[in-house]
Length: 534
Image 1 (cartoon, one colour):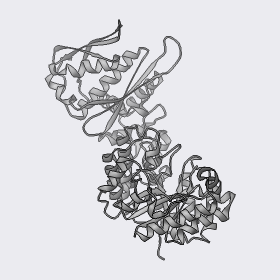
Image 2 (cartoon, one colour; image 1 turned 60 degrees about the vertical axis):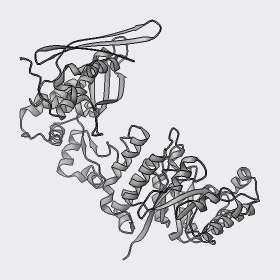
Image 3 (cartoon, one colour; image 1 turned 120 degrees about the vertical axis):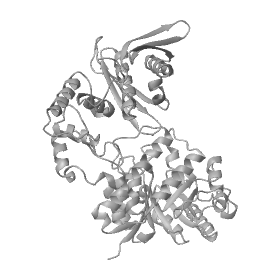
Image 4 (cartoon, helix red, strand yellow; image 1 turned 45 degrees about the vertical axis):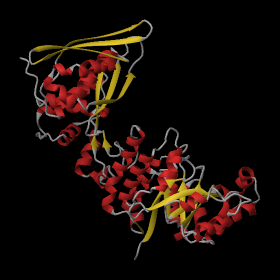
């Protein structure tokens, strides 16, 4: 039995650009389009040529997308103008791309209130736009805006909008849930009715996530008959976002209820690029990745409870619906006060540490973690600090940065000034470091790293080190509140690590987290030990 093909259409470069705070540069668009092409998506919508300089230039020198169809976006012609003379259609015809996706109204309420024209005028605009684009030998896709809302109020007119595009040669008629308010059961019922008018092989779905049903609506629409699904990387998009292709693609490929009936042009081995694709977008946008994203999030395959970890080690299917490696992700065993010996063993195994499961040091590590978490530490978000703690207790981490004393001074005259002084004892010598910054942590960081030329032994290891994020949490109330500080760091590898410090004093908590970050960098670089006499 042959499988039906499902086509994937990405709109990240347009829908994603409508997200608050997102503004893609030309280089951003090139990078994103190329990774989408390498994965094997069928369509990559590049934007709206003529609408802004970046999109116009992008289409003037289109990227080489192999088999992905580079697509321009636009809108139907305006009333009172011919398609040939409409200035918004000319850039679409002249764009260096084989396909054009045009949006048009499919809700009579919007035809009246937004466009201020008659229903028949709107149908003519759709019809003449389709004719013009098809005549110019472009593959034509029609995005029926607010289709589901329109169908609910006036199904005959909404279907007329679709037919006027389809009858003039549209390859795809895309049903848009533009305000994201339609629920899965409604999508299934409406799509089933539409397939009696337009063949399913010519239907697509474009879902927004305002009720957090965009993925569910997209999958339901496929089950009901559509054969193209539109969405974005990580569900990026206006308001609450669009359908998340990072969830839709692996679901269609790996879940039997879909994979037994349908197939994608995306090869199975390319699924392992999805996690990198997800994180590349966050890197380009300078955003922290959403750990809770299904499939590709850092927490998507994280296990914290000791019983869960034991079960996963025996049979991963117990708590993992797929093998994380299939989509380029990995299992993450969390260590916390909820942990058992199995958590500790799993984490040590991940670090490459071989140890007998009956070794008493396992219990020693577990007891230390629980005692520290009682005082405010939380290792489920500070992997690097836990790795250092465990390996120190196992005697595998040498001493690197021995701090003899430090001092931070904040003063204000016209401006606030923060100065820090740190004294290290390295190889039996006192090394004094001084620095200034816009706050205590910045001043301490500058004091340590800016003055470390004095410590040739370690200076070069910190040349590519960057602090990405600094978070403070007050664990209890009152003037003697305990403070927890979490620092995220990275280096030229592009991988980040998290370290933690806890103290009633925010400077002390920050300093602990900062020193752990530096020690971790030295540890993973296998730096030489500090030779102070014990």
